[in-house]
Image (cartoon, rainbow, N blue to C red; front, side, top):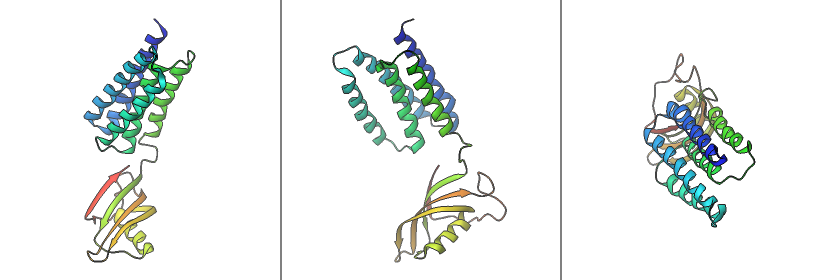
Length: 203
């Protein structure tokens, strides 16, 4: 087996672990499974073609940079999904363009997979949240706002960033970073049942 064929096989194993072993069990988005697999295999194929042509790796890397920007602008992805997307790109590039010594490229691929496995593990800061909320009251006192959010979320509030205070509509839009109390569901004894008007949550 040639070195390039071995790298292709390692890439396919690595991206399979990333997609089927890490991403889908944790995030459950079928459409992104297709995207990650196709992006990886396509990048691998084009990178291999560029590596054997006179165009060079620089043009290939620039092309993949443009493609990644287009892809990331075409759908709403959270930060973890963006990390998986770039991992799929990087694995394909390493498998197709690399001229590194034997052993280094597989080690770099393994490092990417391990980084995703550890960084996106549910046990790693799993009770920390970031949430953007619109509250039914105009808060001009940040301390009062912090106390209200702590009671509302049943959490320890670490940071708040007020985005907008509307004194006419009597609303406050705020981004809050907090740690859940009483487990990952945030429902311990005495947890508040109040809810904001609108909110979006991301981990």
